[in-house]
Length: 323
Image (cartoon, rainbow, N blue to C red; front, side):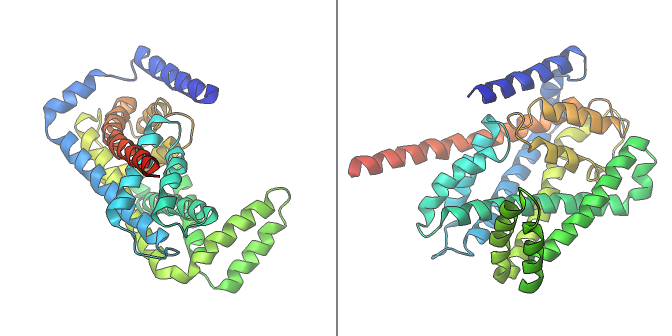
């Protein structure tokens, strides 16, 4: 509890500094409602993103499920996870709470499998984001790098992570002998080797479902594309400089990845500072205010998860009373 409170204090302190320094313009929120249907369009895109993400998670769960899971059950639990990810520090926090409810969908799910498949879902989601960032960085390398030396460093990082993503995905669907060799090599790493190798063993155990893994990765690319499109849709009318959509795919993913780190709720404060710097690399000086629009749109959507959470608690209470 103390750690959570400290993280909230840290996030609020960052916001206070941004506002007092003029880097965060809160009046932009009201202006954004007057410009056009950007809020509605971004909100709709986020709904589609969550639905596709739930379907991806459903595919992964069914690799070991004893029955076909209902899509709306998984979607409902995903919303519960999103709610807690928004009100507690870090995007992965909601996953831990969501696992408690996922277990009820199929009693055959083991704790190890649920943790592994949830981690894999996160990894595939991250891989899709890195793939997009690397692909666009590769295509528009010469155009974006001339904007500033700082953005050139971001592009180079994207390309490095792009190569790592391709290598990881190739390993994930590679033959058993090759995977075994990787696991044995990692076991030799002092202190953490054994833990990492055990985790990889569980991940590689899903290699028999290569088709599902590939479909999940393609879904990840689509959802991450829509996520950046939602960011650009709600923020583009207020850019203090010119920024084509294709350029946004080269640096916005970096900020979205960083906001998933459990430092503050939903990237509050931390994300504002990060995007203030990232947008400055492409000569746009109101990045914190732009991220604030996307943050508020995402938060208002994710807060809808409180409804299935309260209904789930009510259902559990009725089940206890019946017993």
